[in-house]
Length: 378
Image (cartoon, rainbow, N blue to C red; front, side):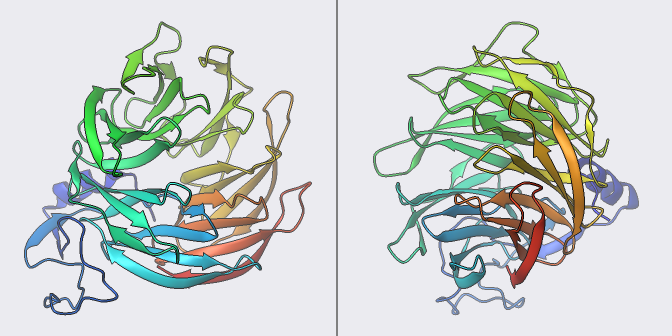
C-alpha cells in the first residue's frame, strides 16, 4: 500500500529502520553506454557511497515530439521511449539522473528536459537529440529540500519546482544555453507537493500537502518571481492531502487530487487568475489518488488511484467544470503520474510499485472509456 511522503518518513523513523541504497549524486553518465563505473550493485547510475533513502512518488511521463520520457526513481535514471502510431511505447534508451528522480518536464521544440532529484536536492538538465535521446547539460543545480513536482513556462523561460521538506518553491530562469539560474526560493504552505501555471504565465498554483491548502501567486513577467496575491486567493483550504494539479485546457478550471480524502476537487479560475470557491463537493476517486490529467479537448479527466490500483474516469461539463464519474479501470502496481498524449488518443500511467508504464487507448471519446494496450518497463 502506498503511503504519503510524510507517512513513509514517520514510519521509517519511528521503527528505527534505515533504507540504505547505493544512489546517484548528480547527472552525467549514460547508463546504456557506461559500464566502467558499475559498483557492487551493478547499477551504473549508483555511486559508491551509501545514503539513507525514502520511498518517493513518481510523476507523469512527459510526452513530446513523438517520444515519452519518464523517471525510474529507484534506478536513479531517466528513460525515453518512441511513441508508436498504435500508442504502444518502444524503449529507446536511458541516462543517469540524481538520487531518486521524481518528476520530468520536456519540450521537443526547445530540445530541453529538466528532472527533479528528490534526495539529491537538485534539478538536472538535458538536451534532446534528433533521435529523442537525452544528453546531460552541465551539472545539476541546487534546489530546496526534497524537490518534487516541476512545471516549465517554455514561452517565458521560467521553471518552478516544489520542495516538499523546506516548504518552498524554487524559481529558475532558463538562460540562452538551456542551463538554469536560480531566481528565488519562495516560501509557501506546508509540504508543497504540486505546482502548475496558467497558459498566460500570470498565475501559479501550489498544492500544499501538509497544510491542506492551495496557494495562488502572481508571476512577475520580468523575473518569474512568485508574488503574493490578496485574500481569498491565498491560500484556499481544500480536502486532506492535496498532491497533484491539472488545469483545464480553457484555463477556466483547476483540479486537485486529495490523497488522504480519496477525492478530486474542482475550482473555477476567475478572469484575473484567482481561484473561486469549490465547484460542487469534492468528487470521489479510488483510494489514494496520486495524479490527475485532463485531455486536450477538455471533455475527459483521469485520476490515478495509487492504493486502489485503478484509474478513475470522468466526463467534464465544459460550461461548469463539474465532473461526472465514469467507470474505474484496473491498473498496474501503484499508478501515480498520469498523462494524456497531445493527440488525445492515449493515456499513460507511471506505476511505482511495478516499475513500469501502462499504455491505454481512449476507446470512447464520449465516456472516456479506456482499453489497455501494453506495459513497458522503466
